[in-house]
Amino acid sequence: MEPIVQVKNLAKSFGSLQVLTEVNLEVYPGETVVILGGSGSGKSVLLQILLGLIPADKGEIWIHGYEVNRFQKEKDWDPVRLKTGFLFQAGGLYDSMTVYENITFAMRHHLHLSEREMRKRVQEILASIQLEGIEEKYPAELSGGMQKRVALARAIALNPPLILYDEPTSGLDPIRSAMISELIRKLQRTHGITSIIVTHDLHCAYKVADRVMLLYQGRIIAHGTVEEFKQSDNPYVRQFLEGKTQGPIEE
Ligand SMILES: Nc1ncnc2c1ncn2[C@@H]1O[C@H](COP(=O)(O)OP(=O)(O)OP(=O)(O)O)[C@@H](O)[C@H]1O
Ligand SMILES: [Mg+2]
Image (cartoon, rainbow, N blue to C red):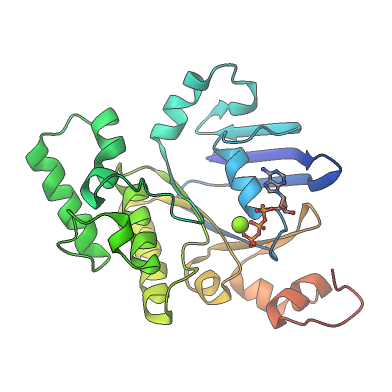
């Protein structure tokens, strides 16, 4: 089976700060991969590179069969973005638009649905994240956690085969976090959706991941199933899982 996402020797620096040194990874159709890593390890940068929001310095990136690092024009990204949902770490809702307008923004461009069909779809999605009836509200009228879930609704609205999540559970209470993890699982089971999730929330990782990877000092230094990770004797993995703040490999 061909990977849906493949990254080879990816590097990225900002000035003298080398964030990604040599990232290699493959994600297969239907998989849920969680990329763990400490704050500042480059998780968000990695996702933004995958979406073409920031350029890589070197490396090859294949998504949905396109070698995206060879794209010349912004328009080249259209077929990739159409098939890729994205949840920004900070939500990234448009403040001047209602919840309904936010969720249907991309639908209007890409799907040819009637207003009635869109209403119905939005209603279903909002119900799935327990946010019924908030279509006409503006982001400023919602709590941070509600905004996050609306952003998630927007990411899944087009039914994309691939979804990238940047910290889907941050800023949510434990019950809502568990709900989001459940939803990610459900999307995989019922729609066969492939997901890449970056997070430092181990609860979420353990719940949703088929495979876990650890990003450390610009590289994926370990990968395996949740069970393999829990039993790993790799000191960096242990440090991350146990949340040690002292020791020889402190950053
Ligand atoms: N556009 C940018 N310009 C300059 N430096 C950047 C830029 N984006 C990110 N960085 C730097 O790259 C490093 C990695 O940032 P990134 O946001 O990817 O971390 P992260 O792993 O997502 O952390 P967190 O868990 O806190 O979200 C940080 O040192 C950050 O300051
Ligand atoms: Mg981040």
